Image (cartoon, rainbow, N blue to C red; front, side, top):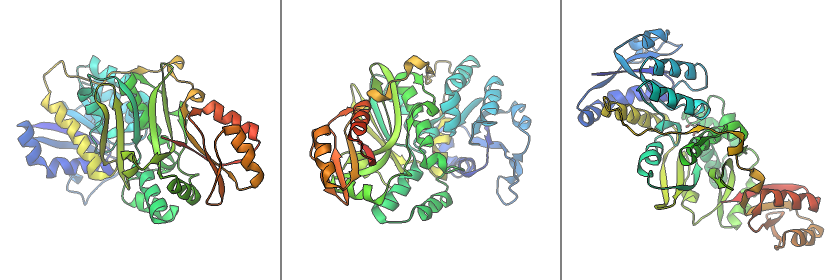
Length: 403
Ligand code: HSE
């Protein structure tokens, strides 16, 4: 019997207990061993839960229990989640987590600590909820160089964009709905302002290029400025609008960014709706490969947490198990965002005199669309777009990059 402890009995933590109990037969059949929850750490009591008797308020009950060999951290936030993770790894316990904040901020250090202590630190559920993406990138794509990753990485914002832009629902109603369904972060600003997706794209960038960037230092725009007019213009251009995490190398350095993007309908990411996430990896031998599934929610995310537990149990006693490896990025590892190149949609006030000015500056024909004067630039750098906008002297109503 393998004993597991759960840190944090919220949406995902209670889901993990449920997956371990309800799928006990599948897990036991796959492993030839039973896995059970022995302790649950939370500040609250859960008298009505079938797991209520396992709850402790004292982390030491878990840390000092030699029978607990795996700890599943699903507390959210950096502290005390990071501190507890560190203590568990140092005590010779493997840790699995859904906590992208801890992985994005401290993943390099925690992986090193796990290796030093002969245990494992796994974080499949930290990106893409229930979608297998971390393990495939570490194992199945190991023979490839990664060229780029483009992902719809936040279920809440994809749910909001789908309901608002496709179904005309109000922002407040849809956000409340996403919170009720357990998709949104405790503070949904992390979802709608793009920080949650930023944490996830820096994790994927680290797996792709070996450098863990600081999510606070990358270009990050959320969805709060996207309007119904943008959606109409997008439709007229044959595109949908999605919040995309993107990473690639620019001049040999790592670029990671989050922003709303216009996605041509021919791109498979354009069809990823509701709480679903989609991650399109371009690898030099395989070519493009798409990972798709539920990116948030109790049981989908918990299923990935439990998959990590099963992985640890299956490889117990083996000392050459593949592990992700990356280091904290130095200043010189960050690409210059102003050198990033793409096509961009720019919308200006619908005034006839602006038409010639824009055509001259950008060399493309401006179009009147949905009450705005809209241009789509050729592929050019961020710096060039900034400079031309400054030269035009016009106020930009909307600026959305193409994917
Ligand atoms: N708030 C996150 C999302 C949860 O909506 O994607 C899953 O990481």
